[in-house]
Length: 459
Image (cartoon, rainbow, N blue to C red):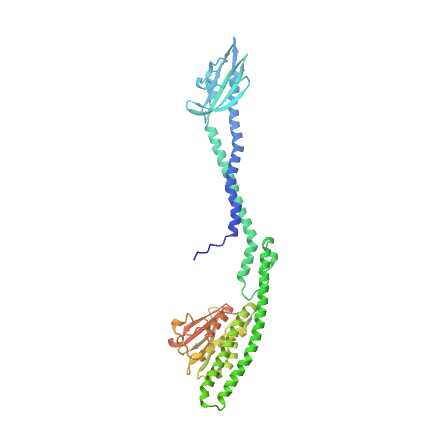
């Protein structure tokens, strides 16, 4: 069987569509910022080269029709001075003869017209340089002036611009990602609140969801849920009507059958019919009990959907009222029915809890046997209300206890008539009240103790 794929995350999908474009936009923004910032920096450094060229053009002179460069050693040193880069210059005459500076640099003269400027990259003595060439006026002639500078400041400026552009882009991307996360979280908050509201709801709460809290785009989903809740409420009403009708229709013929079979046993009859009448009466009793338990189970499940609220139930009073109905059957079964009642209260439905107690007492009466001692206890323990019914009968085999809560299952040690629905009804009613039932060994490791733990009610 193929494993089920996990459901896609709406939050993750929204974040992906918002954040993934940043993977493309951040490099583009970095490149754009780099281009916008690095060019002005390079232009500024190029202007510094033109300053040196202009200074050389001011020194350049013409004597007797020949261009001369009256440049002192101190001036030449000053023109080459730089804390970071190596600065080299070369000045030639119209015939290409060197008037001052580096001959190797003059060899890269691009032969410009008078007044023209050109910036270019080149190599000088195997080193990359940024160069500027200028066609300077020297009398009636045009003399080339070239100034070259190594790339130290340019490389440092480019690195600084790259780091600044990348830093700004990453900071912007992080801010946008954070804002996207916050925006998605705030956008999905109504859905989360609606989901939490549904999780908190039990089968007793089928009121419509407040659609005004949902975004317009998912309000249709909330409306569909409200329609479903409405259909469930209608189904609960139909189930309740059916159960009431079924209870009425079944109770009368079964009661007649029980009464007629009991009277037939009491009245004179042929001996050969006695065993048959006993079986008929036992089947009628079992059918009446089974129909009562099935209807109780169905009504309990219907009550889970129908119940709007619950009352504070005093378990001591509940057991006291039930005692009158069970003392006489216990005496008839030859059992000693006792009570150990301490204050305990819970929130719930009184009729459901009475059915729970009736099933426990009926089970004890049917299976504990004659001479058994049956004790009903109530108390408060660990913040919970506890109801126990304990007997010293044969009990339930430990191997059967796990399945004792299954419907229609009867243990290997079960004796007497039974339907296998008593304990499942007990567990179901306990769970409807947000509690649970457990099976324990009876006194001196004999018998059975059914302990029901329910939330404690504070009165």
